[in-house]
Image 1 (cartoon, protein in one colour):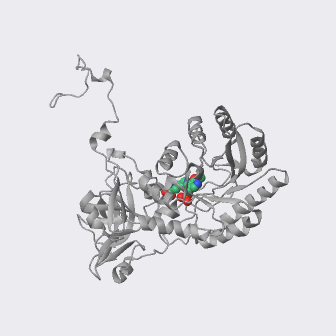
Image 2 (cartoon, helix red, strand yellow):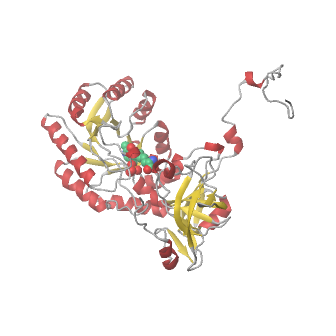
Length: 456
Ligand code: LLP
């Protein structure tokens, strides 16, 4: 069941306030910073992602400021939004990067994130990926299993290097989030089991090519309750004491990401409260802290802008069919996620609202963004936007149904720039090839089962 919504349309339409500090209405027009969204739509055509540079900056500052005394390493989780322009904004603010593949490592380096501020996470790093990370001289590799520990040891030794590693611990704590993005329970594939951590650390201290430098944890994403963090962090602090008691130096603690955002009526932990929790638990241990926030830095900074293609009045439902689809923003289809839907031009005050399903053109019923939602009476050609789409939006898009990846546009003050172009259909098709042996015309087409029209 849906909980009470945050921004009801009556409120929006009456007070006319804002979608966020950086997406606001002026005289009924939605603006991204100083740029009318409709102007971008006219220039690049829908659908497209629209980001606010000021919003990324504000989100980062709020997180970083909560930890001013500690000055931890804040490694932005690249997976949330890996556009190079976005990475450059965070790099310029002093962020490092948390990467989970060679592709993300390359993106972080290309955006000029210093290698000594990059952490490599993930359960299935290949030897080639580990080699790339070691060669780049990154800050730390988070190791999630004994076989992976041995692989890092082999690869780094072969390069004559010593890789600094942290053991990612699975604390067996339920983050109370969607099952598909929960990572800290022992049924989840992530991390070394809590009870195995000491022996993994011990092994790491003996293997060549690796130096265990600390621990890491990440219990899940879109975490809106602070208690699971408390439980996980207390377990990690306990491990630090145990390891130190056994004579192992533990200098670093990577606390992962996961802080949720408010898509609907959630009340995620405030960065200041989260920081206090961290301080209370880890302050006495004198560790160098790192974090891997993704969503909280990016979700509120992006919209997916789309246009109504048709309105179909069914007997059971009113369908608003838009030109964006599940391949562009998969979160509703995959996690039943909520994204507010806001008009780019507000309807007149007092205009009627009516329930509608907002759907995309993809041939799956799951291609549904909203069900039975109270919305203005959108008409063909109207432009609307899905809010809070700056995280896990463009990065999760695909070309399903042979739809082109949509552009990403970045606004800063009164400027906007396309930071990922819409590819051409030629580019899409050029990835495929028809093998030579299929190109030769078959001499005998009589076996073709397609009958001529009218044939019996
Ligand atoms: N660190 C690690 C090791 C992670 O696996 C993740 C996210 C993060 C950091 C960043 O978490 P965040 O602060 O963004 O919550 N596609 C899903 C979310 C998947 C998150 C995967 N791991 C969604 O759209 O909700």
